[in-house]
Length: 64
Image (cartoon, rainbow, N blue to C red; front, side, top):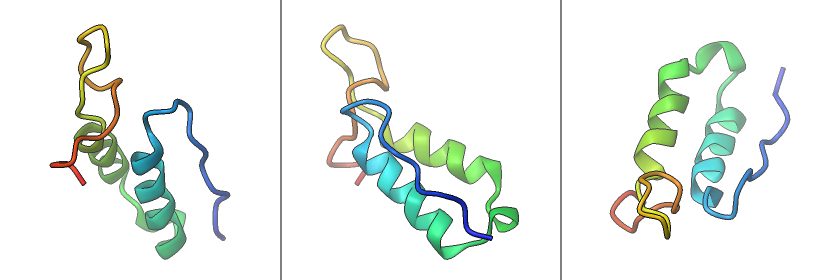
């Protein structure tokens, strides 16, 4: 059974959510390890925001 699409939580996580939706579309829920979703989130939310906090500023070009 396919799970519903995930939506952006902030204006910065569009690329992260797109990758996760792609994985969800291609594989069944039981086939997706939690570590994969965690890794996608960690490595694609790698920019600094306006306050200098890492991870809240979106995705850098290098992470794409």
